[in-house]
Length: 330
Image (cartoon, rainbow, N blue to C red; front, side, top):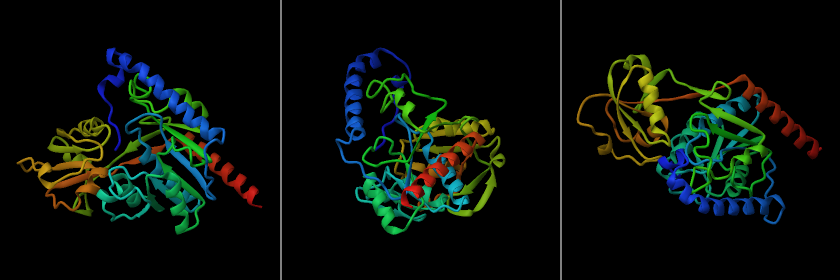
């Protein structure tokens, strides 16, 4: 289960300072663990396909999944075969690797896994152990590139390219490691990655959305502007629900906010608010609600629009990685 961000992680306050000694212990353990892999004291598995990690150093949603979708599309347009591995948060059947399809049950394989399978032209596997997940993926087919949605701290898997996603709004909170702050690793860890991509930033990527799609029928759509000046029940079971609510408000929509925990599991009665106002949710929530028979339910698919700088840098890295691997294989 993913951790959510308590409010005291945002600033250096009494609570965070009281927990600071514990965070130093945590940071030391993290450094020892990483060092054990770095100096080959622990076993590292090297994939025959190029591995690209899209991760972050902080707890909570930084925006990795939209970036993975966008990078997958770039690779496919370059005529490369792409596989994707994800943890499958919120799924109950991913302790062992499983293949994920667009119509897979999100309660078994995780909501983000199904979302990725719906949006990407790639074979997708969910699994808690990244090495096992990549090995299972490679048993299904041959791939030029394997994208890992999250997994920066899974050092048992050798990686050809590390991309750290940073939330441009939240950044690093109070910059303390767990449990005093939101960081899994210190900010200095970013010095060793190949790329840093800022979400919600014109220098990294921004999210674009233009339409609402019926939860019960993907072929039925309406423009976001059609909801302007209307009251809606907005449902968001994501790491930062307030972002979704702010997005709707920015489009002139009157929002009744219904925040849920990240990866929330919904029952139909959870979404019955006793009136006929439209129900609007994220695409990540939709994959768990599409079989509930919701009336007047809509979701908003978003697309990551990458800056040209990010596109050029990523493709340069990919060309270098594949060229190096081809030379070694020759």
